[in-house]
Structures are given as C-alpha cells and as structure tokens.
Length: 334
Image 1: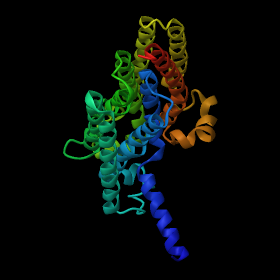
Image 2: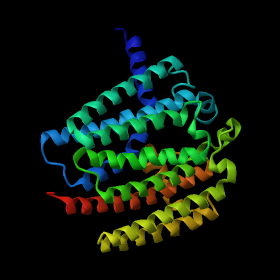
Image 3: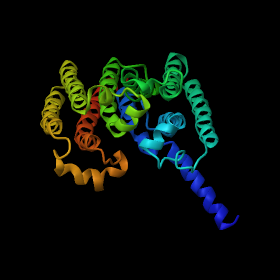
Image 4: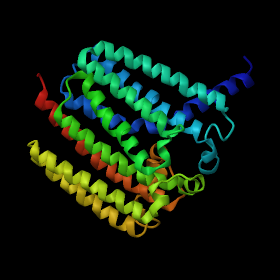
C-alpha cells in the first residue's frame, strides 16, 4: 500500500470516528457509573468487569455515537452554516459513507445489547434491552424526518433528558441488580438537568437554527430568557436533590448539595446579566484546560454556558456519585 493510499485510508477512518463525535461519549459515563454504584451488586471478578466495559462501549461509542452520526447525516444543510468543518459538509465523508457509518454502529449496538440482556436474563434482561432500544429509537427520531424531534425544543429537550439522563441510570442499574427506587429518583434529576443544559447548548447554533426553522428556546424567546428558564430548572434540580438526600438519611450530602446550589446561583447571576464578560476568570479553563472536552465557541452566550457547566457539572456529578455510592452501600450484600 503506497503512502498516499495509506494516508487517505487513515484520514477516512479519522473522519468516521469524528462523525461519531467522541467528545459526546463521556456525557453518559457519569450516569452509567452512578447506576452501577447504586446497585451495590457489582462483584470484583472478570465477568462483571467485562460487563461494565461492554456497558460503557454500548452507551458511549455505539449508542451516543449512533445518535451523533444520524444527526450529522440528516442535518447536512444546517451544518453547512453552523459547523462546515464536520466530516460530511467538509467533503471528507460522502452521504453514502455516513449512512454506512451509523447503520453499522446500529447493528453492532443491537447485537451487543442482545448478548448482554441474554446474559442478565429474566426481567432485568428485558429492562436492559428495552432501555437500550428506546435510546436508539429516540436517538434516530431526534434527527430523522418525519418526526425530527430536534426541530422543537419542547420535544427535543425531553428526548435528550430521556436518552442521556434517565435510561442510562436504569440500564446500568439493571445490569447488576433489580432497579433501586433511589435510582429512579436520581435518573429523574438527571433527566431535568440534561433538559436544562441542552436548552443552553443550542446557543451555538442559534443563527443556523433560525434560518432552518428550528424552534430552539433561544430562537423562540431569546438568549436572556433561555438562560433564566434553564437556571430555574437547574436550581430546582439541586433543591430537589437536597430534599431527597435528607429523606434518604444522607444529611451531610444534603448540606453539600445546598452549598452547591448557592455556588451555582452565585455564578448564574452575573452570567444572566452579562454573558460576554461575566465569570471571565474561568475563560482560561475553557480555552486551555477543558476546551478539548467540552468544546469552544465564539458565540458569547454559548461561551458563557461553557464557563457555567465547568462548575455546575463538577458540583452535580460529585453530588450524584456520592449519593450513588451511599445508596450502593445500603444495598451491599443484599
């Protein structure tokens, strides 16, 4: 194989991986980890470690990757405006190659899910398979016509909350134990948190969405009001989390959750007032520290959102993983 052919082949593989958008895979990992921890049933043996590895592959590169690939395939015209450097609008992948990309990933995801659900067996196996298939279905209709849920924020936000925040928790729990009632509550909190974050993430494509007739919240009510709605939802999530922690007997966690809420509000107020210049001390973290993981943006509102999630996500993930660990200890050995 000549160096030119080899180079072309490598670039093509890179484009296929980029279409699956690896940066987005990590968004489901905390929920998967939380679901497993809260089960209190994973054993330190080769079988369970392999099951855990398969779970992360299933919901990361396969499940999340599938939804991202489908999104790029059906949003080609929008991406020509919003993200022209993506694999399809840039010409690095043809539409036919993109179709093969998500079709192959879909088949592999279904096969792996089937194997895992058979290994689990019984009602838990049915729950596991059902949650994964639901996620794949929602991931498809989110971007694909005729439904194309992403066209309207009142459909797209719940779809994202369900796929990224809710079923991931249930599926990870079902992998090792019966569904814990506390896990359903944590899954619900993640559902609403994901909804709020996707509302603000749409800032980055506001211009293209408006031209393409996409009804994001930023297009419908403006950026300032979108911040307000999203921040209210997020604050209610933290407040509900504190109440749940108290009801579960995790009193120290409740105080930490309330402190997290106070920090969030402290950051939200200046961002709401001045998205461009507020919380500027965190800009270096976005540009040089976490930029490769969370992305970068020249849109002032979206850049402010990126600064906000650095703190918000750290606080929320810390709280939920501590809660999941405490719940798992409760069920340990049962």
